[in-house]
Length: 192
Image (cartoon, rainbow, N blue to C red; front, top):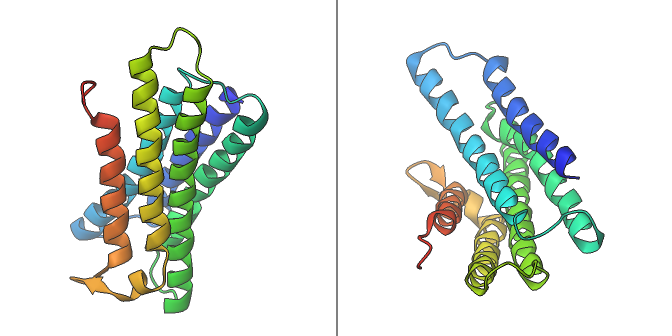
């Protein structure tokens, strides 16, 4: 399962990069926008991959409940580049764009909720050599990830697509806040 996981993460990153080639930029502005949008997707996938690899230190993804969760995580990771590509494409109906945006929000929420579940699950079943401090940090990280997943799930509500700040939907703002919270969890000092 570990090898399959690495392949899925690698392919998802590659598919995201191929979207850059699919419609090459024609001006400096479109170049910067393409790089920024790819960077957003890249940060999502790298953040999930870093959390996933850290969790492998304390647990295994090879049996029972964790295996099923791993399959769900790999599915959501594999569809992220597809949904993200649809999300940034122009010339779509408003209804279709809203549906893609909602699906992307749910995808982010599921990825984050699964990572939170892994953290809590593995702490309960960690190897005996895992210190109480490490267990506490992973448990706290799991709960924090569930909170962030809640932000992503709530952002899927139709109202958050309709309300805008400077031309950007509140939903996108909520995603950025959620991703910043995810990275803050990851970068928190060990003594916190």
